[in-house]
Image (cartoon, rainbow, N blue to C red; front, top):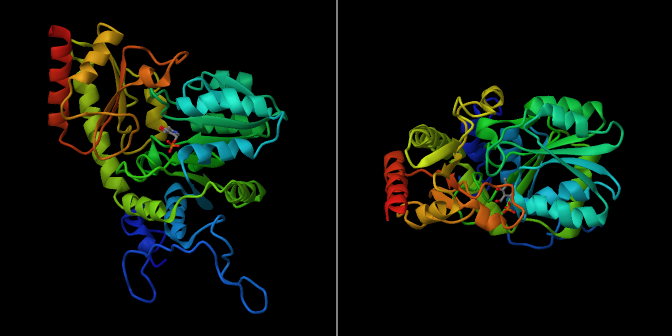
Length: 385
Ligand code: PLP
């Protein structure tokens, strides 16, 4: 690594820490395909590499860059966001008490309510946008982990990370934050007291909708961090070499992509807030949004590229609107360069807290005027046909 860590995070990301291949002087790293490494003649493993289920040299640059961007002691890339997140819960013991948000990524919420609960974790779901609700749920000496997602899918409710960290630490618990939507461009949870930051790297970190990947960043290189590394190696939930390379390639443009998406999302939120066919716009950047003051405190440079619109006329007209877009793509996921629209309740299924009239929007890097015009025509056609 040749770049100074003191340069701005955007520079660190653009140059992927300034890494130059020492032999060929290539500015882009090779992909290491090896699954195993030769032992030295004296039986040592001086290279530090033994077997490919533990790690791969292709991870090094992506992990070092992400750790630097988040201000952490280290990072681990995983085969998916879900494998990164579940590793955090599997690092606990059956019987441990966990506090998690009611509003969060639905698949992880289902896993917590299903597998994690039957494995023995005691999960208490709370309204995490209320610090007093977190404080009431956390049991000193009993709670081991407080899990947050902020802004949280799909209503973008915001949690005060610093306040939650204080509560968790006073009780002897760790604080982990799913920061997939904020990205290190907008929020660095470790600076607010988080112990672990989790990303679905499938989303903004990669940014091109062409890999599934996850990552954890640890505030400290301690015993718990070693346990997370061991869980990844034992379960084999490592990232493929090509995916690690693509993740690093995508992370180089993280800052301009996220900054562009934030500007467009803010413009769209403001314009749709006054639209005759829209009931409500959910976006942390709107002064009318419940969590706006906290978002302002812990997000800098923008409020993210994700927003939701609640369509007047309910579920039928929301689905009809999504059916009539031409530029937006009807797909799940988020954080890619192409803008996505999704009737969120349809994918979350029965029992979802997601309002049935909600369309989730992931704003990409197209022209914001084009995005507005397309969704505006879709809303009008859905209402008038
Ligand atoms: N966390 C958030 C906020 C997500 O949006 C997602 C995926 O949609 C995940 C976690 C899970 O990540 P992955 O799909 O990479 O397993």
